[in-house]
Image (cartoon, rainbow, N blue to C red):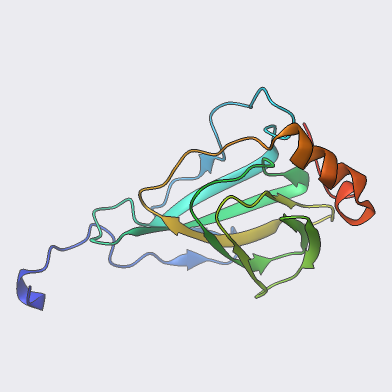
Length: 164
């Protein structure tokens, strides 16, 4: 397909507002619609903006910006698809597999398939990051009791894991 016949995206340019840390015309959404019922599926004070992949672009991925408020966290979960995450704002703690990492702006986090992961803001400022995933992807799955037990048994991950 030549460029002249390529479909035009509804998204060609979105201005970023550094004062609000938002992109114009991109709705601010809740992280998820429902809290989970299994340990680790809960979340707190987190929003998202879908920046690309939802507006008719011919791409096989989505680019999303998540922002976690002080004391907030994402679900502790795993998927078949990968995540590529780049911290943009603030500092946070990240669990990937059985390791916990401190993250700061411009750090890169790769979450392999079927790997437990969670993003936690244990600071006083917003913690924001870009997250790239497949547009067609599986739903999150809770950790097994054994996976959760291993994370809670390790001092470095136990101090980061948020269950509810």
